[in-house]
Length: 246
Image (cartoon, one colour):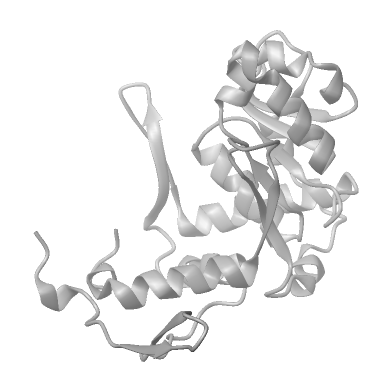
C-alpha cells in the first residue's frame, strides 16, 4: 500500500449556485505539460536512450525497444506514412490490441500529424460484431488499417468496407498485405522534421471510439494537448510515479 505522502493532498474550492449547481475547482496549479507526444520521445531518447520504453513477450524472452531506437523507428514509419499521402484527414484504423508495433505506428502517426484510431479487437475478431466495425470504417474513412496477424484477422480484412484500404500486418502470413517491416524502411525523400514541426497541441492525435452501447459508436477527437495534460494530471496527483522509471 502506498503511503499517503505519495499522493497529492486534496485542496478543492466548492461553489454552490442558486440553480442548484455545485462547482468544484482544484486549488493546485497544473505542472508544465508537453505540447506533443513526440516531445516526450525526443526528451527520453536524449536523456535515457538505452532505457527500455516498450516491451512485449517474444517466444521465451522479450522484444524490447529503447527510447533512442523507438525514436528512429517512429521517424522512419512517419516518413513512410507521409510518402503514402496520409495527413490529418486520413486516419489509420488499428484493429489489434496493444503491442510494440502498434505503439510504433501510433507514435509515428502522431509524430507527423495523422490520427490513429484504435478499436476493440472483438470488432474484428467476432463475426457478430462486424456491423460495428463497418460503422466505424464508414465514420472515419481510414486510408490504412493495421493488424498484428493477417491470418487471424482475415475475416475482417475481407470486408467490402476495407477493400480500398491499405492493410498493414506485422505477420502477413499468406495474405497479400503490406508487411509492417516495409513501413520501417521509411522514405529518405520525406522531410519528417517539417511534418513534426507542423504538429501543434491542438492537432488531433487520436480518435477514440465510444462503446456504442446506446447507439452507433461515435468518434471522440483527442488532441495532443489533451493527452499531454492528462499525463501531467496523473503525475501531479500521484507524485510517487516520478520517483523512478516505471
